[in-house]
Length: 207
Length: 203
Image (cartoon, rainbow over all chains, first blue to last red; front, side):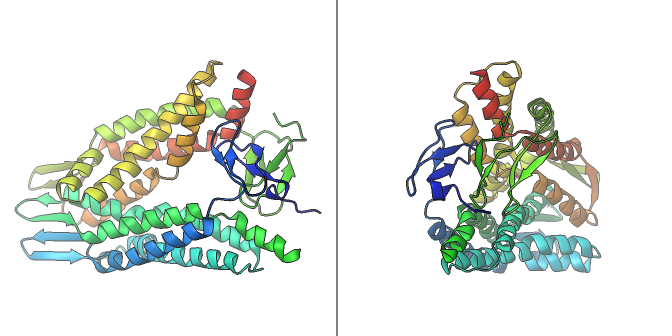
């Protein structure tokens, strides 16, 4: 069975409407049907993905070290980081909720960054490692990305609701900004990566 | 409809393959990587329009009524989504406020309005004006709507606050749940491929 790609024939798929267009091998063009920009592969995919990965990895540090939520109460001020928020939920009996927040806020961003690094490096090294597995990995990264926003929403609602002047007020901490940046940057990184590159290196290995 | 000879490329691995006619509700997957190529939506555009209209109604309700309230010493503090945004903004957290506003209000609203803009004329056999632009906006914005994540966030904060005060669920809490479901249904039923085919036939 011949495995021929569209790019091999100088054809490009429009991501806006799904039309196949003749663009030549390295050229970009515009889709004749919907006018969106069309290129055989996402432009500068590797470089852009790396840039977003590095930026996200840098922001990952303040996101976890700085407090994301500050509680001022009659018992004094308390600053909560993401991990201490998870610990609070754990100790207050809702371990399942602690698990959800831990997965969404700590595990997912970390694993997502590692998965993206694995994908980009494997493409750069023209690795022959099972492309189907890598494509699946990419799909998971794309799917789970937005769920990391969970903690931002929790902090936002706590800020809005806990405004009991005499008893306690909650405000968002600088860690929340950094954490939001991590989520957005990793989403951009995933969008910049072109899964078709995984399959391209396979073909070149054969030939 | 596919004539069985049309070429199509997989958007995930770029493999060229022939389009085949699908049974009702069928799904075509890439032979090499298993990526979704296209699916058959029986009456897909009508359903997409119905879900979109329903979602827009719930969107308005979700943004006007309070999501939750806290009852402390007889006082009731209520939070709406836009109130939460402005609270964060006044707190000096304008970046977080902007992120919240964009992912839960602006992106979903633009997404819904763009779908309505394309679907409504097509339902009556007319062509929308400059659909290219609208569909392009739609493809950009669809990654950033996070209503379903927000719903989970509401639930987590409810549990966190449960031992602090009495919680009064608001109307928007329920409508957000419904919005999440209708929005997802509308996005799945809205198939750009089918829409372009229909527009080519209509013109």
